[in-house]
Amino acid sequence: MESRIIETNLPGVVIIETDFFRDERGLFIESYHRERFAAHGIPAEFVQDNHSRSAQGVLRGLHYQDDRQPQGKLLRCIRGVVWDVAVDIRLGSPTFGQWAGVELSEDNMRQFWVPEGFAHGFTALSASADLFYKCTSYYNPAVEGAIAWNDPDLAIAWPVTNPTLSGRDQQAMSLAEYRADPAFRYP
Image 1 (tube, rainbow, N blue to C red):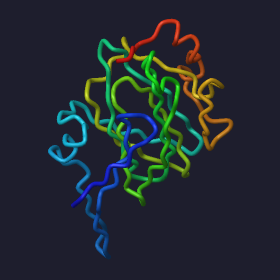
Image 2 (image 1 turned 180 degrees about the horizontal axis):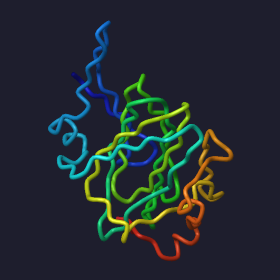
Image 3 (image 1 turned 60 degrees about the horizontal axis):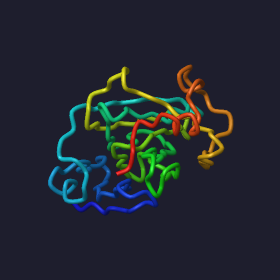
């Protein structure tokens, strides 16, 4: 099975389209192939898999783990539909504060690679959505951070206006606050 890499406006953040086979029995997809993914700059080692289920209108993000234990994520929606976003938070980067977004669904089978140095968030567009993702480092709450999903300096074109947020995400910092004490610097 072949994978196609679609570059985004953020260097290193890519959309992955993988061939899959569907018939009356169901479907088959080779969702990860170490050698092929490594050839496209996606790490050859993941240490943790996560599965997140969200109701329609839930928005999670924009999350990151700082440079003490940064975390890259390879994401795939295995049920329903999500709008997934990556934001460059590497201070000094030519694309600092810019974002890339993609619709991931159980039908399109797309994957989204969000490397270290980028914040990540998503919102569920279907009644329920399951997002499965592989991580390059372990979750560590002591090094996590969050930037406000609706910060006007980011101007992300979210397909929701009044999402359901966690308490942590309601208290997330602005991009200006992040800039004063950044977790990542470029290069």
